[in-house]
Every structure is written in C-alpha cells, then in structure tokens.
Image (cartoon, rainbow, N blue to C red; front, side):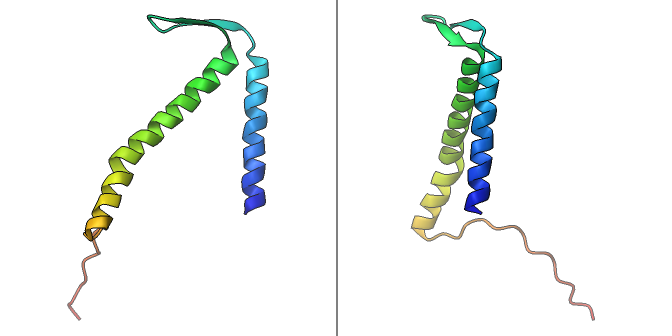
Amino acid sequence: MRLLKALFALLFIALGVLFGALNRDPVRIDLGLAHIESLSLGTSLLLAVLLGAVLAGIVITATVVWPLRHRLRRGAPAPTAAAPAQDDHD
C-alpha cells in the first residue's frame, strides 16, 4: 500500500512539473494593492490549486473536525445514520 501511495505521489509531482513546464508564459497577477509579475502561468495555477486545497482543509477542520472532537470530549455520542426499520410481523 505504501508503494502505491508513493507511486501516486510521484505521478502527481511529475504531472505538476510537466504542467508547469508547458505553461511558462509570464503572467501579471493584480491583487488590488499589490502586483505579482514574475510568476509563470503554470506556477500561478498550481499555487492557486494548492491555496484552494489548504483553504478547503481549514474549512473542513473548522466545521466538521472541531465540533466532532468537542462532542467526543464531552462524551456525547457522535451522530450516526438512522437504523433501518425492523419488521416485527412474522
């Protein structure tokens, strides 16, 4: 399983490097108060995807992980899926 994970990681790293190499055109990013001009298109897109993944992880942690961790510390049971109704008619 570790080998498979390592292969997937290497594959995605290689795809990221290839993506960055194929998109070398310089772009200017205007942030309103600041400008970034020295990034290539591939680098800026990969950084945007990375920033989105980090922000999504923070949102998931704040809205799911922390409430469940708080609930576990209090000793309250975590919400579970509803059990299917049992038919008592024989």
